Length: 186
Image (cartoon, rainbow, N blue to C red):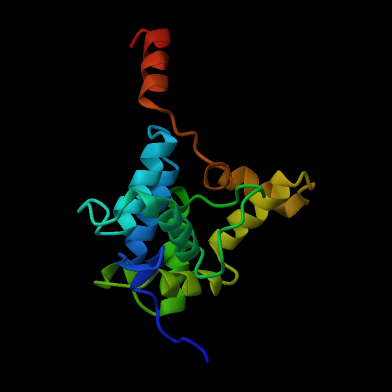
């Protein structure tokens, strides 16, 4: 039997925990996971605190935390199992958001940021149906560059004009910034 519902809770060690399933919280989780200022432990705490309202209320016992993270990854992956890693990084939700959202709005037929709620899996569905767009061009160039493929003349020209969209921005920690200021005397 097909389950047509979108999860509003996750089962962790046999206990059901309510989750914040709106796309904004999922994107906040990705921002926390990419924050160079956070330690791995702080990233894990951020994931659990953003997704599970009960985490900071002390309702989740410590022995549930590992499974809670596993279930969070399953949820973030759209229910397709734990997210795959190991391939080259092709997208950054924060940096690419302005280009992603315009295509998602086109697919959704509305401004999704104006919606009071949009389930993460629905957002992912829209994301997966974007088709040819500016963001797909950005990812295509990134993929070719990361795999060492030679860009054809048209792609080279496009990349030259749009390098700021394709290249990932380096995020510096506060200590990096302080060191740069020290070196530059500012």
